[in-house]
Length: 337
Ligand code: KG4
Ligand code: ZN
Image (cartoon, rainbow, N blue to C red; front, side, top):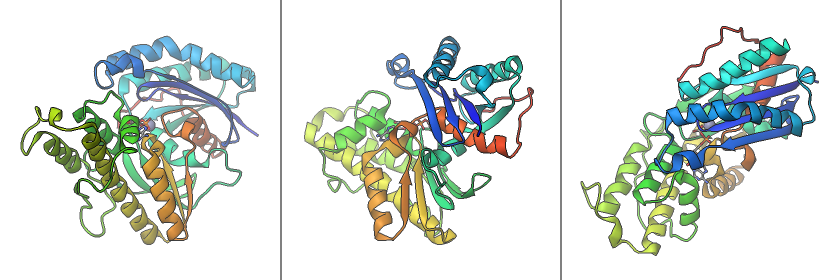
């Protein structure tokens, strides 16, 4: 048995969690900064770093308290060290190194995207691997072939805007508040996904990479008029806007499902997993689940509380690194990419 304290500060959530054996979550505390960034329409890195400094100590205490866990009962500290906002990562990494030194506990360094990839395994007694893992977040859209926690091969990734970034930018075009993904999800429920035929960019018949900048521009021009970037929003009714949101979302979901099924055929695996902030999207969860059922594939989506950034997924993957002896030194550095 091993108890891991996870720390996550890669973007705008300050998070800490206590997880046993990589899948039993004893606490999962997230202090969201959405309110601090909303008036700027996106994450302001300096504000994010400052908020992490102010909040992290209390968030770590809260995670330990909720788990009724003393520092001497922790076996290891796992921290996100890449990728993300470097000023934000630095706060978590510095805190984790300090606690590691003061408490005399080993440190492990966790890749944020791989933590999202492993998040669907949380709560399962048996890991879902081998699987094709789709991760769609604000910064990344990636497909992995996960053979085990120690063998993860990247099959494809975004070539421009990430899936979540496209949701946030389209939401801004529709004048919806940040973060836009959940707003589009909500608006789209009242819309017709077949109302507008937005492009599905597949980058050729075999590619497993993603491109969402074209659809973002297509929505922009659809709303304002060809070649225009402003002035057109007022001519659309509430129902038109819901139809645009639903049609955009359907196009993104189609591309994500098509590429995931391509990866399934390429690898021969029979299981699909879904993680990352956009994995919270109701249309993506429903459509992927239905298509997997049609294809006789097993499907696991991360639980809603482990889709958006959290430290439980960091502790969960950290456990497997710890078990393999992949201990980081106190020279550990934060890295943006
Ligand atoms: O994984 P995450 O919390 O942070 C990063 O690692 O980037 O993902 C945040 C992204 C944002 O772009 C947000 O708009 C999107 O996830 N998101 C959603 C939904 N909930 C969050 N996108 C679509 N539908 C949702 N329900
Ligand atoms: Zn994330």
